[in-house]
Length: 142
Image (cartoon, one colour):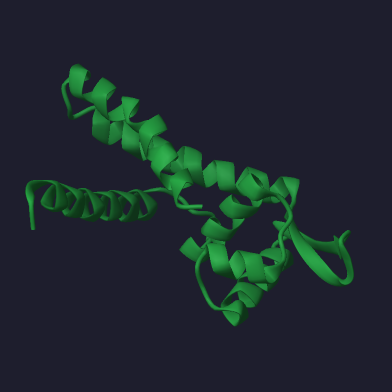
C-alpha cells in the first residue's frame, strides 16, 4: 500500500473507533445502531419503502422489516400509503423519532466536545472544520 492508501485505511479505523466509543459513552435511549441508521436515513431522505431502507442501511429486507416494526412500536416511525403505488406502503419518521435521533446525536456531540477538550484549541478547530468535508464524503456515496 502507498502512503495515501495507508492514511485512508488508518482514517477508516479511527472513524470506526471514534463512532463506536461515542455511542458507548452517550445515552442512546435504548436504540440499536441499525435503528439509529434507519431513523437518520428517514429523517434525511423522507418517507421510504422497506426495500429502500434495506438497501441504504445496508441490511436484508427481513432485518429492515424488523427494525421498522420495532421503531413503529416505539412510536418513532409510522407506515403510510405510497402515493405512487396504492398496494405499497412507505415508512415515515414521526416527530418523536426526530426528537429521539436528535437526542442521541446531541449526547454523542457532548461526549465528543469533552474529548476535544484534551486537545489544543488550534487542533480542536481543525477537527471541527472537517465536518463539512466528512459530510460531503458521506453524501458522495449515495
